[in-house]
Image (cartoon, rainbow over all chains, first blue to last red; front, side, top):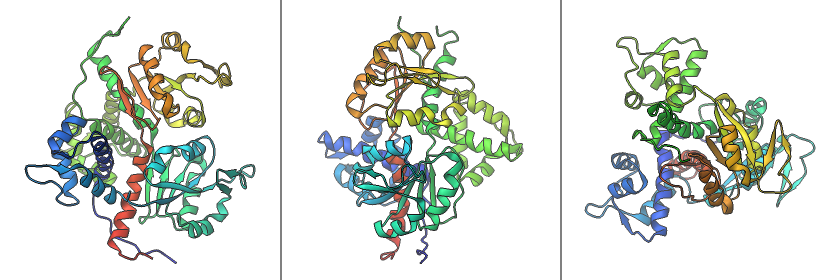
Length: 221
Length: 221
């Protein structure tokens, strides 16, 4: 049975990413016992842009109180709700090689409510093996397990050559949100959210600063 | 001998991230044989914000030509130079567990000029083992190998408990740019660039859309 389609509000992807960053900043403030914070204070402490903070939050409502700013724990709870972090998500992991097993052990996911509830791999040597309290399934079990376990998101951690095929099978099984780690371009239908993780971008965020520094000092050594 | 410190231009981190995204968009256009593009076309085709594109590029110069827009391959080359992708960087990988070995095999790094030129691990069972043409070194060899191999960036892929210690050793050995995968907060001196990879943020970029959809349909099933 096809799921109902829904209208997605036009919130820029970078705004969503910043909401995630704001929730982490607010968590730090809460740990430090801070009760209220202005957008200026938030911006100064975490090297953000205060106008950007206000603009990002304005997509979702009016959270600040004049003369006070934001109530830290309230705003954090609101942002968690907006990001869907007020519930547990059942996640399918496809590919149990080095990357797949590292992602399965990655503690950050469970902390935010993402539970890897099923693992799939096509390698006959892996299928049927137990990983903690899970058993590795072959891809053909996808439709059954998506229903049985209420899987909603999937992580693709297979080699680039298999990524499109795996994604097609996930979509056919009813998955609407896919995080792809394979360094290749994948196509999905318009009603499916695909996010590509490009780990090189993270390194480029560092080489930029090194390159800028090197450029300003013609002979740094 | 301490390296000279340098002044880093105040370019927002999000701008740097977007430059990486722009270079990828421009590569796709080049593949498709597109010679010139306006900021509007770029924005429409890749779901960007054209004013933001112009603002981001303005940090680095005047790249557009009135009535033409940007020359695709020129702009791409400029951005690659700005991001430091016009050279090869020698990268140290610390931690050769599941994540470390997955990162070593990650093809995206080499494509962008990031070469993992040395691997370090404290596990006596791993030290001395060959991985392709490299040998896994113990951490105490860091200062020597940083000099011998011209290592400039480091990837930290160790458990959270060891991440601060490893980072301190990297900084002591002269590394100025560190990409941390351990889900923990690390402190570094001000002249060191630290970037934390938080893979949950990527999943949150998906749960946001699912949560928004669910919210707009009170009973989605």
